[in-house]
Every structure is written in structure tokens, then in C-alpha cells.
View 1 (cartoon, rainbow, N blue to C red):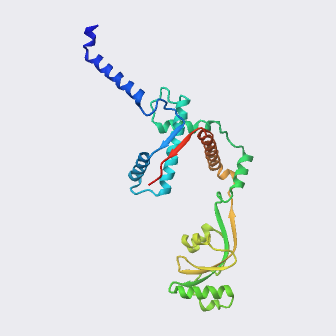
View 2: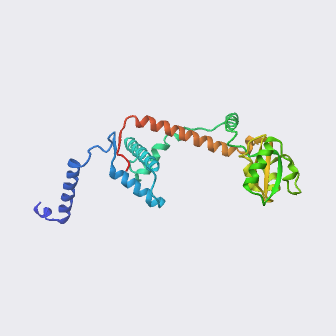
View 3: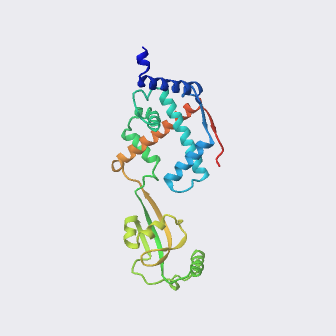
Length: 269
């Protein structure tokens, strides 16, 4: 027995046990699964420093606040994952455990049938509009005109007392454009002109806006948003619906879990 006590390995193991016992008795917490979460000043400094390293700039107060919220979420998911034993035999880092907790309910999400997909498409027409069609009038005024002239001419157009021929410059494209899709308008006037149409009001002279030729005053007579058919975007619809359901379930899960936690966050400097 005395012989074994002299072995270096025994001394090493004894020392390790003493260190372990000390931290168990005097460490910050005997319960790693406490329901109390404290984000101290040093934690906020670390979060801020991590943000600076990744973005190469000082984060705003709102960005730091958002990062703190993310840290609290991650801590809650991490502890709940430990309570469920998701870390058993798995040498993964804390964030992966939190992600496991997030994904528990997503496996229960099914798929939509055609009727449900069509309804989802109808409820989100604006998001899935392929492109917009426009019918409009335009007055081409060339390139060498001043902002003061633009202001005066636009007022005259809206009041109806301006002689259009007095400001109009020669251009081979017709003044009245029929209802056309965006791709056709791009071919006639260019992409910057077409993009600008989306910000113009209906039934009133606006502008001038720039085309590949120069500047134009524009009067939009009609605007139509074209919604694609279900078969054209079936996969995109399914993916978007599933992502929305996952986010909804995750928010519900977090709300339910976070009720049991007392969260304390130090003031942000």
C-alpha cells in the first residue's frame, strides 16, 4: 500500500480530486441548470468585443441589445437541452445544443396540399408577384434641363396649363405606352426607368425620371400586379410556408420556456 502511495500517478489523481472538490464546494453554482440567468457587465463587454471582431466596427446600442437577447435565448435553450439529456454522449458545443432544442418541434411540421398552398399564395400575393404591368404617358425633355425648370414644368402639367410641345424633345418612342410588362418597358426605356415606375403615384404627372435617352415626365394610367400560377412556384411556396411555421413554433417554444427563468441584464454602457 505504501508503495502505491509513492507513485506519481496516484499523487496526480489525488490532486485532481482535491481541485474538483474545491470547485464543487466553492464554485459559483452547484446547479448548472438553475433558472436564474445573469448577464453581467463583463458578459456585455465580451458580447461587444465579439461583435467588433466580426464586424470591424463598434455595435450600436440596439445591436448590443439584440445580441444580449440572443445570448439569453441561447442560454435558455442550452439549459433546457441539458434537462432533456440532449448532451448525453454528444461532445458538441453549447450552440449546437441550443439548436437541437430549437428544432425539436420542427419535425412535427407536415406539408400543405394544393388547396392550402393556393390559399397561402392568395394571402401573400404581393410577395409572390412576378412583375408589374404599366400603361403610361411620358414626355421626353432631353438631358440639358435644370431642376428649377422641372419644378415649374411639373406644376404646369399638374395644373393643365402647360403647352406640352414647348418642353417636349424629339424621341422616336410613342408618348402613350400601352399596358406592358416590366421586361418590355426595360427593353424600351432601360432598367432604372422601369424601377422608378414602382414609386410613382397613379393618375398624376410625376418626375422627371431618368431613362437611357434622358429625362421624362410620366403619367401612369394603369398598374397591374401579375401573380404567378401555383405550379410555377410550388417549391418556393412550400419552403416559405415551412420556414414560417418553424419560426412560429420556435417563438411559442421560447415563450413557454422563458416563463420559468429570472433574467437579469446589466445596463449597456
